[in-house]
Length: 25
Image (cartoon, rainbow, N blue to C red; front, top):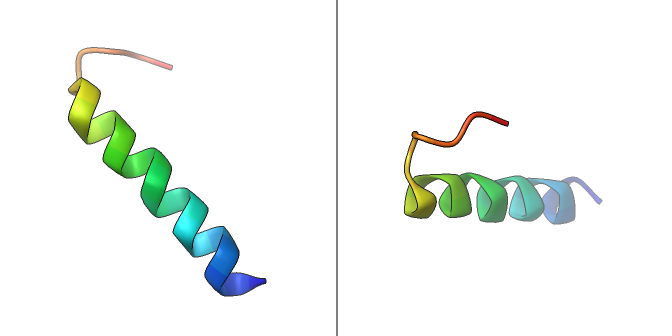
C-alpha cells in the first residue's frame, strides 16, 4: 500500500516536472 502510494506520488511529481513549474494546480 505504502509503495503504491509513493509510486503514484512520484509519477505525479514527474509529470509536474515534465510539464514545468508554470502550471499552478
